[in-house]
Amino acid sequence: MELSVNGVTIPAAAIEREAAGLEGGAGAEAAARRMLAIRELLLQRAGELGMLEDAAPRTRVAFASREAEEEIIGRVLAAEVTTPEPDEAECRRVFDAQPERWTTGDLVEASHILFAVTPGTPVAPLRARAETMLAALLVDPAAFAGEARAWSNCPSGETGGSLGQFGRGQMVPEFDRAIFGTTATGVLPELVHTRYGFHIVAVERRIAGRALPFEAVREQIAASLTARVQERALRQ
Image 1 (spheres, rainbow, N blue to C red):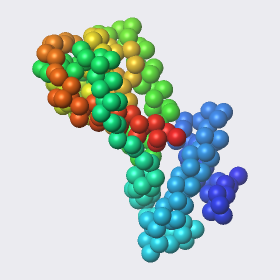
Image 2: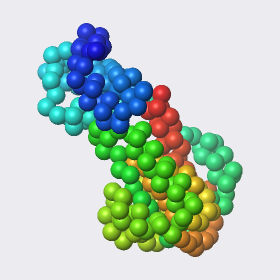
Image 3: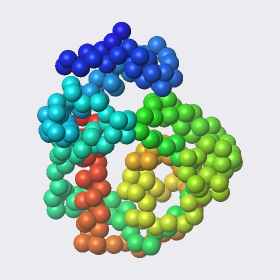
Image 4: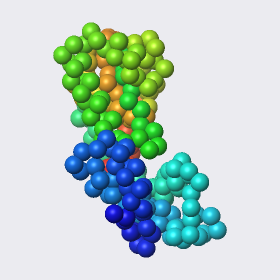
């Protein structure tokens, strides 16, 4: 059965394709209809904001590819999602709560298995596969390198997922927070979610650094707080 969103018809065939990408299941069609409706509403909002060619309304625009749609949706989110800047007091509270977290010279030797999220990727099944593998590796960490070679979407998979040694700030903020926000070693018990997808991470070794004053890490804390607020706003 087709779907109508503010007068724009989404054909039944498109819904079936989207549901197939979600790997079936009782709720696949409902999830596909919801996802397509959300995409359509975002594209209609792009028309209202004058982001479409010749400021045409969504009802008269046909996109050349899914990538073109993704680019427009990204522009809508950038325009509509506001992220307030954290103030000095807020940054200071974060610093005072965990002063031991803010050090220089900290090094980590780690490996990862990346389940990459790309445009059109059905995220829920991908996450489920990552969580299944994580559960198995928590039981048998010795299998990590082999699984990385077989499944990781990162070039590091060829070397068993090894990222070598790295310090704070050398990885994307989401990954950095997950690695340096804990003192754990071995396979981390939770997936690490970044802009690239879902990561299973194993920390082989940690080399401690020295404490930094607040002034030296204020911008880093602000960037971390901003990223968290933006993530919540996007979900909403």
